[in-house]
Length: 232
Ligand SMILES: Nc1nc2c(ncn2[C@@H]2O[C@H](COP(=O)(O)OP(=O)(O)OP(=O)(O)O)[C@@H](O)[C@H]2O)c(=O)[nH]1
Ligand SMILES: [Mg+2]
Image 1 (spheres, rainbow, N blue to C red):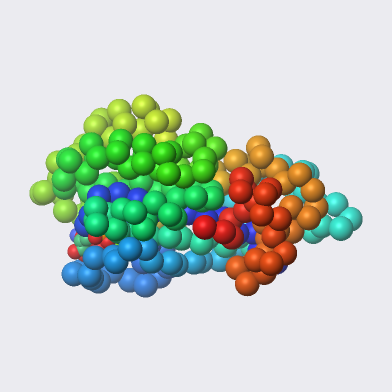
Image 2: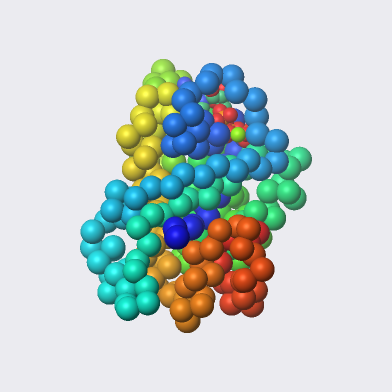
């Protein structure tokens, strides 16, 4: 079985959310892809040893491995890529619930999209089930390749990042596959650490966290309001 974490990607229209996800999912870069309608789903499974830092993995092992449980060797990210358009807002907010992480995206060529991160972060805390400090979260500035059009610089990003205590990355979804993989690994590690701060209460809870979507019927709904990654 794999451990599943659910991540949502948020930010203004056309900042590059879909291109970011597609790059991580190895779907390549297509200039002029249509805007997202509502919410799109993507997933990728990686070996734990590839994604999770050894010191984090060691703590996970110490906490959870015993005679009955061998630790999961794979980690699957369920990625919900949302539309930034206002008309889909009420649909998108339904997907905030029970996420283990959020990636807040802005466009380095449009300053307003960085300023609007405040709105997205507050929106996430308002409609989600957890505060920012309980989930994995980071900021990503897209389109580093469009240098001549750049309006946002490191010091501007750092101010927002420090205000919310979040790490940040700047990437080009056209050229930066390795860096984008590191973005998803960073949030993977954060989610793992938060998961260990709020560990499942029993062996059954741990099983529930590992089940795939079709196994809904076995889930303890009350407990999983807080930590299940399989429900909306
Ligand atoms: N040059 C360049 N263009 C990019 C990059 N990322 C995205 N784009 C372009 O920016 C536009 C918007 O990208 P999307 O990924 O569709 O934006 P989005 O945030 O998903 O937009 P919505 O789905 O409408 O919310 C597209 O024309 C992309 O080709 C990048 O890193 N470099
Ligand atoms: Mg999109």
